[in-house]
Amino acid sequence: MRYLFVLFFYGLCTCSLFALTPFSLESLKEVNVTLLDKQKLVSDPSLAMIKTEVENKLHTVGIKTSTKNFSNLLIKIQKYPIKETTLVHVTLSIVENVELKRASSIHGI
Image (cartoon, rainbow, N blue to C red; front, top):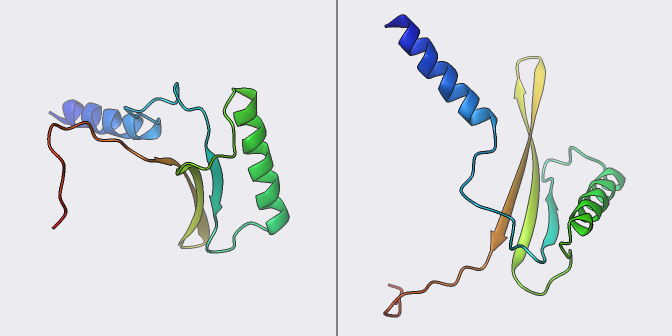
């Protein structure tokens, strides 16, 4: 029983370490790059350097980085103090418009 628990716990931990997602970037043509650093952890020149580097990588794979559509690549930087150490958490997310294909129209409350 103990081995089963250890195996389950190990599997749970290793699955959460990797970016498992049902989404794909294959059809992404253009996106705006946005950096969020509300706690001011990174200096302005460093933020500009990070944004330029991300835009260069996106251009390399054929994704445009200026669009009038609501399509954003968000890079969010946060810190969490834990006793004497500080944990820095970087989140990458893509926000896009979604078109729903339904038989009837949807009405809000």
